Image (cartoon, rainbow, N blue to C red):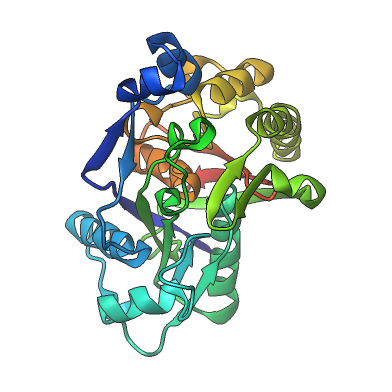
Length: 310
């Protein structure tokens, strides 16, 4: 069985304050803190590519553990905003920049907000089926590349960042293993978040209504399928769409606030990186034994999983 050994991340040093945009968009401090929950959004440097963010996340991983790039046999990047025009695939670019071995599978997964959970299922199953031992799952979806600075619906929400998850067999490094996944797609409504002529567009009300109804139903089904109750789950790591949606989901599921971490204020909604950024903070906490992850958004798609300490 393949599981999670360690995680690391990279958040760019550039930021835009949402408080500096109050006059432009006619908003106040209460809207920023209570609805968005985002004080500032991170922005990658001019000239950087998603692959550069991935490389920096891997360097951070090397500071935490003995991650030997020479032994990596699977390298996957989850992104909807790839390097350049998408050819070659970003995972191949990262592979080259890290000087990984030739005997290494490398491919991209084109998912957004639900991407980390789905990619975790895909990559762990791929590694197990093919006898692979050391995998790197990257997330890097810098929406700043396609955001219209005048669009209140997106420029206040999305921040840039990257994460990397080291995947290894149980008994050879894995600390956490996924025990159950559930997935969903509502493609007929996928236009609620889209890239039109190189600019991100989002119908925030439609996305909220979708998330507030579909996600609790899936999480309840996940818990029931694993014979779990809320009190038996240590943390619910929900996609960091906005403070309002996180608070709404927690209320509808009856979750104690202390079980629903929120890290939006420092960098915003980092799309596929939002869940692993939360996971990075708890992965080594011995007091935490059971986690529920749930990602939802672009697609419209949603995916949830249970992780248990190996």
